Amino acid sequence: DIQMTQSPSSLSASVGDRVTITCQASQDVSKYLSWYHQKPGKAPKLLIYDASNLETGVPSRFSGSGSGTAFTLTISSLQPEDVATYYCQKYGNFVLTFGGGTKVEIK
Amino acid sequence: EVQLVESGGGLVHPGGSLRLSCVASGIIVNSNYMTWVRQAPGKGLEWVSTIYSGGSTYYADSVRGRITISRHDSKNTLYLQMSRLRTEDTAVYYCARGGGVYRLDVWGQGTTVTVSS
Image (cartoon, rainbow over all chains, first blue to last red; front, side):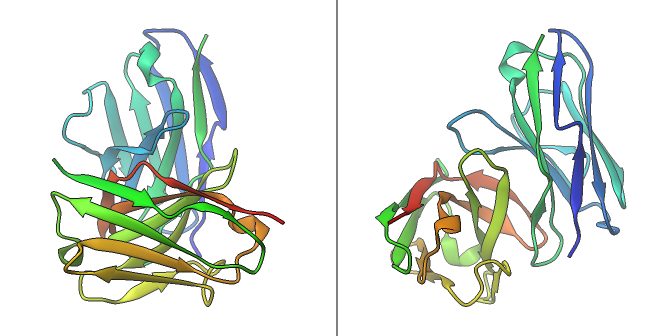
């Protein structure tokens, strides 16, 4: 099975900072990579799909890039409401695999 | 408005059974790929099962043989029948639209399953 490795596992940044989270796939997943964030006690919310497409209604400060095995989620200017745990997830066939998560906090 | 509402969670003894439901509004369950994802307390997200619009079903290795995904077309409802439950099945269970080549773009609020003696 394909493994998804996220880094870092947690980060602390100031409001307005540029934040980058990476996701590494153990095998080529092409473009089939999504990013979600999850706030405590809430369901995950889709941010990015097909590696770089912004889901409708998601603020433009979120962006995704990459293909194959290396992917990046960038928050261009961190806001207080972005405090959450972020997950990457590969799809594309019947097995869906999530990364371990990155907890984002405000410094 | 597109909405998924899960129910059926609760406390069950090890070895017991439980059926989770996910009622959909604003989408047609049998026209979509539908997926169950779970999250153990304090842990990350884990894919459990997907049913394709054509009816094919897929399971994670950790649940295969103990869990069955199904749907009721006239009730527009997705199900997860769980049996021979283990303590490690304790989690919040979410249903979501998507799976296969489709992103998980709509999620329910989750239902909590606790397996404990």
